[in-house]
Image (tube, rainbow, N blue to C red; front, top):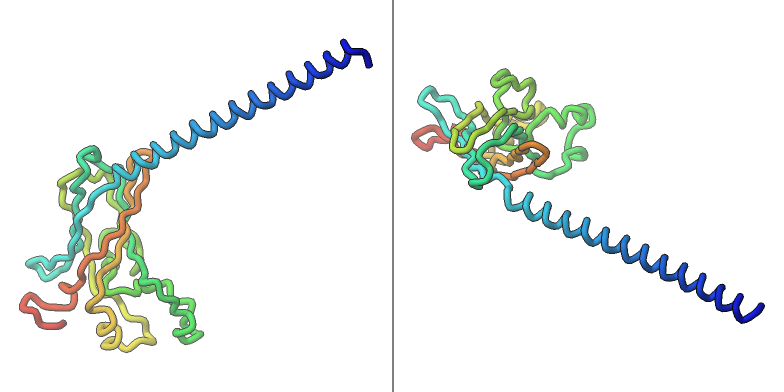
Length: 200
């Protein structure tokens, strides 16, 4: 190989190396930009998580309702939709349930309270409640009741287990493409006691 050919080959190799380095730098820069954009999007999403107040109250009629209200942040004045679901206590009841009843486990709330059957369009004990166009500072409510004990549980044992437990809820809040899941524990003591404090 002549000197000129060798120099030409070296120049080609160096040019190829420079092109590869330039491509890698551009790729890394693009990835870094996407990463920073995602971090900013996540920060904004977290900053706008809806603030919700919720409680169970007994009305004059004697009915009990879950009341909730969107109270913040100020940038979130309205939600397109709010779906409320009960959250199980996190215990796997499979082994503790008679085999013939294991397919019924999912039919129960496994907590102190459930949405009232036949009210607000709820077809089952653990159905979700859906509210559209939830506006900040507007009080909304849905009927709730003491949870139904499975047939293989003694009612008194069921009440003893859950009367001091909160109703564990998750509020799925939707606004445009943003979706937040807000976990709230609400005292269910009202369901287990009369207005005078007597245990029901």
